[in-house]
Length: 211
Image 1 (cartoon, helix red, strand yellow):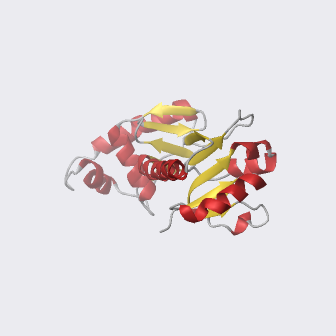
Image 2: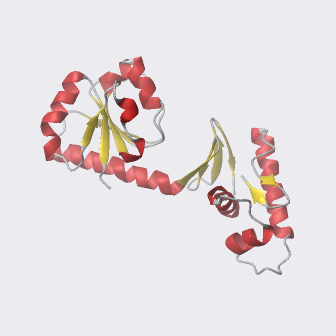
Image 3: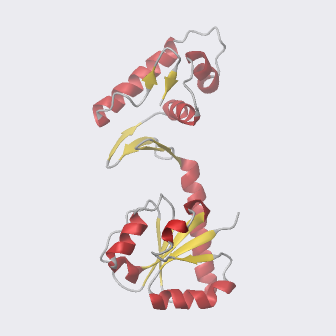
């Protein structure tokens, strides 16, 4: 799949990058509010943003409503508007073609890192590097085993039995005592309830556990 870059820039900025786009390794898609809804976000690997465009509140809103992905913010002046994205790679113009290409490569690589290091569940994010479960500005520390448990439940389309969880996470046989999984889930639920006031992060029914 091609590494498409979505560009948010002023008229002059877009014109400059349009002239050099054939010399870059990545296809550029220039933001147009009239056709923005037609863009498949799944095809976008990174954002390229002109710092001056951040003063346009409509454009800024579109940027902040993008899913979590890396961005390369080119700036020559102070930015007055906040950009609420996980990865904020910045570079200061002027840059050579090689420097721009290298910066975009770094930004795209960051997307792969983000995808591999975090898992989205409902309104939560599991940060596997920091070993934290996050929701907005709140977070709790979770263990490696708890991360594996949450990932397993999140990726399953149906509730999982205790024996299945033990096989997948603890690598235990069918006849192993399931008290282990009950204890871990109880502790995890307690931490989530204390911090997030959420009683339904992990749901337990007769069929099994799910999130």
